[in-house]
Length: 157
Image (cartoon, rainbow, N blue to C red; front, side, top):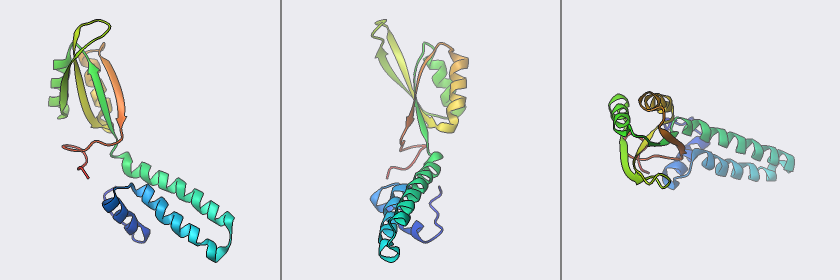
């Protein structure tokens, strides 16, 4: 999670991740799949190769889950009449950026303000508390983001 390495194929995975912009898990799949497939010439056992490939797929999935788990982000879209107070509380209390977008409700034909907030997953509960305390009738749409890059998040690769 902090770009360290234990040596061995981890070094190759870090190189693939840096220069080819693929995840650690995908790099592990590629490297280990190559190694496991070439072991057929030594062991002549298809069972061993299948076991190795299945094991590699499970481990690479878990590796991506652990490495990217701390980087998970959420996007909240909030429609509320109390948009200014929500924006002030989030911006001042949590030091998170808030974007206000002008909109029009199609059903009601009323003008609305839509707040867009990007935050780390671990900040979600605090955000929801602020929203609920400020406007319990607010409409909130929550989306998990695959990646958020820029100020306060990951660097653009």
